[in-house]
Image (cartoon, rainbow, N blue to C red; front, side, top):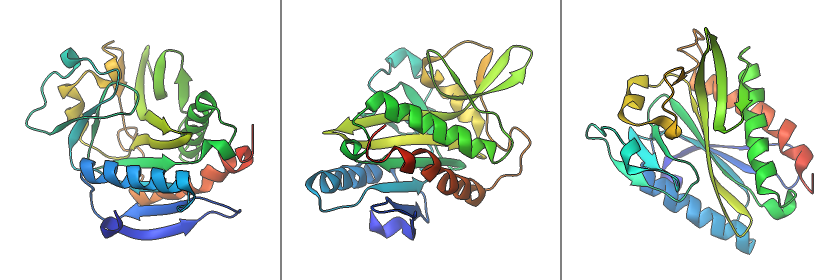
Length: 230
């Protein structure tokens, strides 16, 4: 895990999560192994909470609710079955993945509340770029209204919790190749009026560093104030 790490940032407050940013794309099995190790360390008290920012090489993952029929055409990309919640999604260059490893026993022991906090975090980060991200009942993730009845997903959420320690997390599209989403039914949603977008697709010249800064700046607005209970 440490081979791909280039930066550690500490948010004010004690104790606070460690922040790490990968310099190069991290393959999926390496990322999962790294998360598993940190979750175990958090649980036994030997490791700090962690927010790990990274990109993956182009690949698909299927969550615990994924249906084989929703993998339309992998196009030679690797497909990983994973223990996170949700269905099929794509990861790859131009998408910021944030793997979030927090001890929920210190944060209210509320899994649904945690997912809502992730949504709040994304919405607040998007607002830094004047993007209005919205929740939708029955549709996990964060959506933007495009007009004429169309809505596009800009961020996905898929989490797993082991003995009250979270892992996996969120994925936000900055400037990915959106054509890869044609290989799956993204998150099981086949409605032609519901698509996938990115910050650059919305006409915003946002860089990965810009988004990272927004995520770091808004994390404490949501999670620090939840520490110790809701």
